[in-house]
Image (cartoon, rainbow, N blue to C red; front, side, top):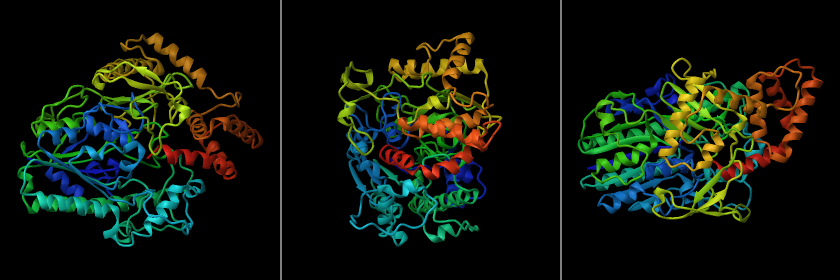
Length: 592
C-alpha cells in the first residue's frame, strides 16, 4: 500500500467549486471530487501553520497547551511511527516555517525530505542593497518590514513558472512518485505553501480573471481589518484566485500521474489544508488576529481509500485535522499510540459513520471554539487580562525566535501529563497571548440559517449545552486547569442559566469602553474599536481611545456606528505609521 498527501496552506473552501464557488477556475478540484470522497464538515483544530502540523503528526489538539512550536521530545509523530514500522516516509515542501526555530523538528521525522526555498519572506537570497519596491496598496508599515523586502528579492529569481517554489515542489514530489511507483509501503507528503499570501502567480493564471483595476500593486493583504477600497479588495480576491488556479494546475499533475500508472488500485490520496483564509469577509483580511470565522476554520478535505473504492460521494460527519494521523496509521496497519484525539476515517468514508459529535478548534490564547455542524460557539476569556495562561513545553521557541530571557525567569516545573510519557515540562507564563479574544467577546452563530455568520444570536440554553461539551472535550485533551479558569467554565462543564446570565453581565461591564458614555454604540462599532486596540501597542491604547473620542465629538456624530469607526481609521491612521509599524513588525515575527 502507498499513500500520497497533497497539502496546501490557507486553502479557502469557499473559493472551490466543490463547495459552491461558481467563478474560480479549478477544473482539477472538480475532477478530484469524482475520484474521492468529499468531506463537507471538516474543521481545523489548532491554528495556524505549525500548530496544525503538530496535529498532523500527533493526532492531538495542541492549542490548549502550547502556541506555535516544534515537535516535542515526547510527541508521537505519525511519519516517524510509520518509518519505525517499515513504511518509507518522504516530505517535499516549500513551506519555509519548517526551517525556522519554531518548526525545525518536523522534517527530520521523515525517512527523507527535500526543502524548496523562496516562498514569502524566506531568507533565501542575500542582497545587501535594497531592491526596488513597487508602488503598492499593501500598508506601508508591512512594506517596510524585512519580510516584504526579502519577498521582492526572492521573486527576482523566479522569472519563469518552472522556477516557482510551488512548481519545483510538485516536480520533486512527482519525481519521487515516478521513481517509487513500483515499490510498496511508502508515504509522501507533497506540501506547498500556496495559496498562502503573498499571492504570487504568473500572468496566464491572472488572465483567467479579467477585471478592470486602476489601483497599485496588491497581492499581500495585511493581518488586519479591511481599510482598502472595494476595488482593491476585489482585486486581492482575484490575485488569490489566480494562485488558487496555479495550485489547481499542479494538483492536476498528481491526478494525471495516478491515472497514468493506475495507482488508484492501491494508493491512498489525501488532499487537505491547514486552515482557510479571510478575503474581506467579516471586514477582515487573513487570520490570527480575529475570531475564527467559518472561512478560517471550515476546511476542504478529499480522501480516496483504495480498500473501499468509494468515489464521487460526500460525507456529512464532522472530521478534523487530528484524524489524519490515525487514518494513515490505520491504512498501513500500524497500531495507534495512546492519547490521540483523532480517529481513523475508514468507517466514515465507508458509510458516513460519525466519529465525534463536536469539533474543537482555536488559536493558543484565543477563543476556544466548538461546533456540532449546526451551531458554532466561540468562548472568549472572561477577564480583560486573558489569564491565567501558560505554555507547556520542553522546546521554548516561537515562530522565528527563541523564547527571550525576559519570558523565562518564572518557569515552574509541571508534573507530567499523560501524553508527555513521564516527562516533566516547563510551565512558562504566557502573558495575554498574541490575540486577546476578550475584546471580541463570546459569540454564538446558527450555521444552518446563517452560514455566513452575519448575525450573532443569544440563547443561554444552547450556550450551556456547548459549555458542557467544550469542557468534556477539554478534559479529554487533558487541558490544564487554568484554561477552564481563563474561559470561566467549571471543569465538569455544569453551569446554571442564572450563573451564565450573571457571568455575561459581569463580562459586559468589563467590556465597556470608558468613553462616549452618552452616545449609543452599535455592537459592531464596539468590536471594531476593540480590534483596533488589539493591534495597538498596549502603552498607546488609551491615547488611541482619547483620539477616537475627540474625533467623534469634534465631528458631532450622534451615535458610534461602524461607518464612524471606519472614517476614523481612514483619517487618523495615516498619521500613526509608527504604531502600525510596531504592530506589523511584531506580527511578522509571530504569525503565519
